[in-house]
View (cartoon, rainbow, N blue to C red):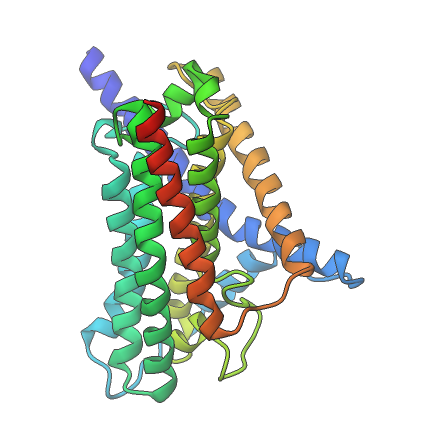
Amino acid sequence: MSGGGSLVGGVLVAGIQITAVAVGGPLLVGIMRKIRCRLEGRIGPPIHQPLLDLRKLFSKQRMRPEQSSWVFGVAPVVLVATSVLIAAMAPLATTRPPFGRTADFFAIVFVLLLGSVSLALAALDTGTPFGGMGSSRAMTIGALAEPALLVAILAMSIPAHTSNLPALVRIGLVHPQLIASPERILALVSFLVVILAESGRLPVDNPSTHLELTMIHEAMVLEYAGPDLGLVTLGESMRLALLLGLLVNLFAPWGIADRTGAAAFTIGLAALFAKVVLAGIGIATFEVFTAKLRLFRLPELLAGAFVLAVVAAVTALVVR
């Protein structure tokens, strides 16, 4: 009975976290847009506008290029499926998620990369110049950002003696002095730069631009329409919410549930929402006062993130 109850509880926790990310991701994008509009002196759309846009996209007819193959149709599904998988096993509202023992940080990065690669392959599959340009730029940025993220994970794993994500969050709760350590701070700054690059935010990419010579992510999804575009939009917003959720739980794990029970899980869910919203507001405010970097300046930014991650790893080895 206890095993069955534990299984049902794990499925329920996974379902709630997936629902929270699926609904909270578009709402987070809406909040960030609203903050940017307010700071720029505009009223802006309502916060729930991304949810309305998704409903409109899913109600339209599916249209695909004639020259595209099955890769074009599978890519949005893979993007959403990888986000759902990570939402189910990541320590978002609780440090004891289902399949938490297998939630290795390196494996989660690999799963995230699957979604990015599938979208880039779909852009190439269309055979359009913009699709090839966007996928080329996206893979270049990914090739520069992934080493920084992997070394940052290594820097956080050395003091904790594990790369298991729930264990890293739990150690931050038990030993808060590790959060304020130089290696953890440097690693998290590097992680933040990677989040801006992977989610296509300023100064790496402008999510609201449609200029052919500057867009990166938008160039890859120009051929999508209807439900396929809805899946891409949903997957990207879920990825942003997941990355920010992992960032705030690694840097400020307070509030996350460290024991079983509905009350603790509810508090953890509310704390996650508050922390992610604050992080989103901070990023939106930063975007108002910054400009997009030139494409040839992006390697300098990502190389700086890699250097910070290397310094963090070396510091962790020396201090250990």
